[in-house]
Length: 133
Image (cartoon, rainbow, N blue to C red; front, side, top):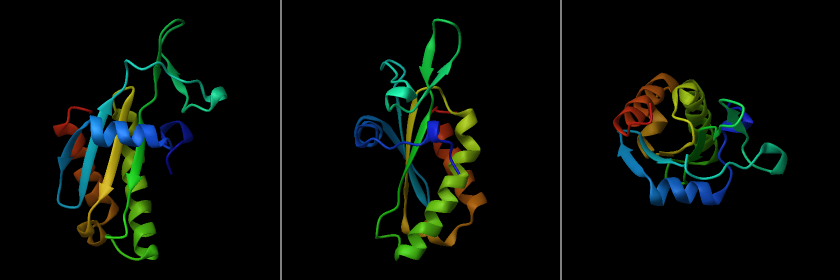
C-alpha cells in the first residue's frame, strides 16, 4: 500500500500529470509524469500531501502516484485486482522517484494478464524513459 504522502488524490494533480506532463506507453500501462518542484508545497496539516524536509529552510513536495483503471480493463473485481497490483508496483518505486514528481499510471486491458512483478518492471521502464528515476 502506498503511504498517504505518496498518494495522489487531487483532480488538479491528475490533470497536471496527464495533460501537462509527458507520457510513455508500455504493453500493459501508460505512465504520465509531471514535475512540480516549482509549485509551493501544501503542508499535510492544511490538507496537502505532506512534504519532505531536506534542510532547515528547503522543503520539497514528496512524489505522488495516482492510478487510473477504467471499465475498459474489466469488471469491478478485475479492476480492483489490477489496482492492487499497480499499487504494489508503485510502492516499490516511490523511494526512487524525483522529489515533486506527479505520476499517473493508466492501466490497459493487457494489464489483467500480467503479474505484479511484470507491471513493476513496465512501470520502472516507463519512468526511466521519462527521466523520473
